[in-house]
Length: 241
Ligand SMILES: NC(=O)c1ccc[n+]([C@@H]2O[C@H](COP(=O)([O-])OP(=O)(O)OC[C@H]3O[C@@H](n4cnc5c(N)ncnc54)[C@H](OP(=O)(O)O)[C@@H]3O)[C@@H](O)[C@H]2O)c1
Image (cartoon, rainbow, N blue to C red):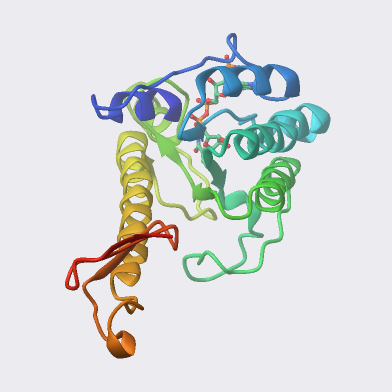
């Protein structure tokens, strides 16, 4: 579901390579490496997941392969190619006992196989790719292309005169296209902040003192890319270093 929304939200100015499960199984390390080496992406967005929360209790190995080994493979491939990884995780990494909305730095404590497998995926990404990842924890996704709480309630409301629904669960239904737009914004902001950082480095270089002028006072000296080329605009003496 989310993968489809991410695809739809992609701006036309980027080249998007969308892969289905049939194209790539994330637990296959060699296949992941092959694809990432071939495509050389700036960003990898991982919407793949073993998402059958209840079934995971009976299939812990399958959940671990997709939700933990898969993200680790993607992180390694990203590290090899200097790509960044945007990974989708879940509120199931928490124990659900909080009486207020969770914050990013709240202690984790998954109670289920699914939650533990997703947390293992997060941890692998943090270990392998500490500076080049974004992990977004979401919950109760709904949208086109997948069973979800909202669709189920709408269907049952049409079929039954009266509904019985658990009342001990609290969550925020999240519209998949809204999340996809927010993910796009996060990736874009990262790009902007990276270019702002290089502008700051550049400005800092411009302010360096010119050794060719008395007292080294001039700020009209620019030094491109660190120290390799220095040019004094005021005294007219160009210097290559
Ligand atoms: N849905 C929610 O409420 C919710 C809440 C919190 C977090 N999340 C997370 O958000 C992400 C997207 O969830 P979603 O709701 O979009 O789930 P989804 O509709 O079940 O999509 C998961 C996708 O992963 C693919 N997949 C499964 N195993 C794979 C593998 N080994 N290799 C590659 N692809 C594989 C599935 O393909 P096949 O169907 O062909 O196997 C499917 O296309 C997941 O990481 C999930 O844990 C979802």
